[in-house]
Image (cartoon, rainbow, N blue to C red; front, side, top):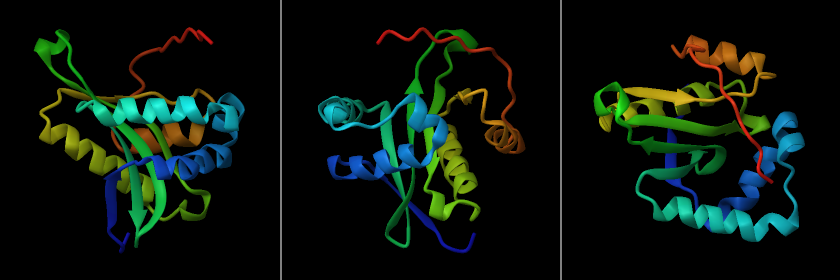
Length: 154
């Protein structure tokens, strides 16, 4: 990719862009449809993420235009000799910017932040239905090492 991406923490003004990314994603839109009545909850969540030094919701820009987003969290733990974990979540690239190598550059940038933080492992989850995403993550060196379980509470 010839254009350098820039990374910045998301602001309240970015919530419509993030909602648009969710709407463009058939799986995410079905599972997590954006609606006006969720705006207060999203704002509260963004403020909580922004206030915590171990979590950042990033907006990724190409030539000053938002093209993607992801959340990067640093999680302490006592296993793996007390190693920290880098947790990458909600990785999304706008439909108009897909196929340009942006997702790969975003992931490599996130992994570098984890290395700088001296994390012992970088982990992420991906919906079972996302076969293309699984091939993408495998190409970057991620291995499907665990089975995840979720309990929906609301």
